[in-house]
Length: 323
Image 1 (cartoon, rainbow, N blue to C red):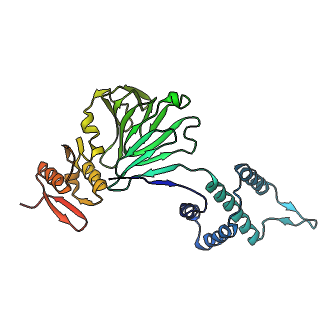
Image 2 (cartoon, rainbow, N blue to C red):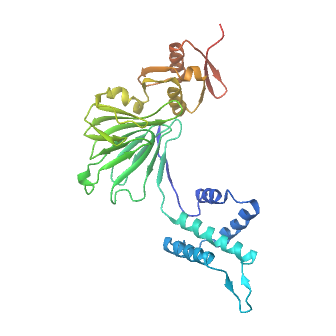
């Protein structure tokens, strides 16, 4: 199942309200409520520029750091009246909030559970996101470079650099950077308490993979693995049919914890799979072409680890029955 899902931030949106909540989250309830009133009164006011925010804050800091002023009667002005200090704090927070929300934000594409998402970027590059994957595209994509950030698994068919002002295309994961000039390749970046690695496989073209300040070049039919805080493994042949099986609904894993396979299946079929850590941590290799029937797959996996399988209210449970 495929679909399109594009979430882009804009001022006054529900996501803006969430950011305001985050900004005010550490304040006492009465203070937060007051600042929310200031925010509401601002309405559709024009955003404050970064220059204005910086210069305003600089003047405030200078005035607070300066020696107390003297009145004509010789009395020191030690503090502002409470309501004026409150207004000053509200203004500072308002400047920060308005300025932050006015900044351009990443465009985020997400593939929900049970859904593959097809994405076409401004440069013409086509990307397929596996269920549960997330792709972030910077606002300036294509202007000076072409950089995207990936969590999960995706297939990239990238337009050549020659037709994009010579800009290479980079996919950044939590521990690796994959750079291409124009090619088709697969990236799987998984980070959990069971596994944390990035796997890259090239269908055609040439790819440069960097991790821990070292690089490896991959040609068509080759792949590499980058684990946490380690250099990419040497280029090695990969079975592209298995690597790309997920695009047609297939499943292929090679020596990974069972829990990782369960997580993949949960995303694909939008259900929950319950299993103890003793089963989740068992390494398993599994290959099955499309179409997949979740019950059959879990029955296979349960057999591998000599476990039992049963349905639950929202999915399945894999467990070791007491003999």
